[in-house]
Length: 82
Image (cartoon, rainbow, N blue to C red; front, top):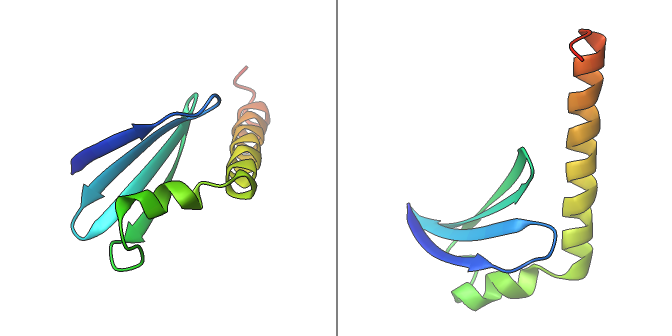
């Protein structure tokens, strides 16, 4: 996997990679990660990926991270691990 670039964001660590005919967008927040694989035939150039990172998309990313955390906390509580 080839590192392409870091994409600055105040809440997330966003990295863009290229691998096997795909762009891989990795978004990290704390212990959680979301990964999106985009075929290089779906975008004309790498800059198109940056355009796709618009505010509605990033808001959904944040919501999903909150859901992931809630799911994790719920399983910890169910198993009395805190």
